[in-house]
Structure formats: C-alpha cells, structure tokens
Image 1 (cartoon, rainbow, N blue to C red):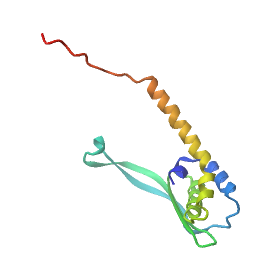
Image 2 (image 1 turned 180 degrees about the vertical axis):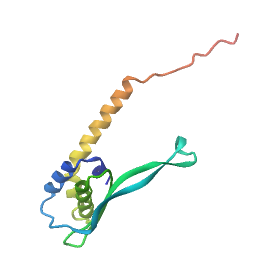
Image 3 (image 1 turned 90 degrees about the vertical axis):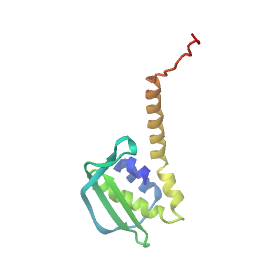
Image 4 (image 1 turned 135 degrees about the vertical axis):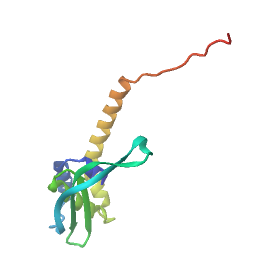
Length: 137
C-alpha cells in the first residue's frame, strides 16, 4: 500500500492493466473525500498536538470473486483511491500477490531512484564537524 500511496493514478492504472482482466469491482461504499485531523509531536517524542486537518479520500471495493480491498489517500483523487483499493483486493489473494508486486515494480524502481537522487543532493551539502584534542597545557 505504501507503493500505491506514492504512485500516480496513471501508474496504478498501468499496473492494473499489466495484471490482466480482473472483472468489474463493486463499490462497498461510494468513494468519498473528507477531512482527518493530523497530529504531530515535537521532536518525535514530545506531547502530541493537533497539526491541522488534511484531505483524505477513501475507497472500499469487492471483486467478483469476493476479495475486498481498501485504500485511504491524502488528497482528492478518487480514481487513484479506487485503483489502489482494487490492487489491495488483488494483493489479498495469495495466488495473485506476485503479479501485483511485479506490476508495481516500476513504481518501486522510480521511488528508489528518487530516494538515491535525494541522498546524493543531501550528501553534496553535508558538513562534518570534528574537534581536535588540545594538549595538556
């Protein structure tokens, strides 16, 4: 699901096309967009505080064979949430899991390349501080 969250709707659509025919997914509830309160912690371990509201879209689908899938995504892209829910339903089936993982491999490769490029940019500006020991005087 992390890959689905980082993928675009077009990448999810291509992944679903690469898996083959799935059948028509039935919406368990209509795809909806709403607000969720985001919470934060100062320093990662301080007292929690309300950071603000973020827009989230959720989808819940059932495939013709009875498998169900769910997806929640930041933003308002209903198509992306529904496609991710369908991929989640397919991934829930052990026999289809390898096909879903292969179909999402290009997204994983793109994310790995982006992470590597970001690491190179950060390394280029890194400053190492060190302290020289003084004598006993």
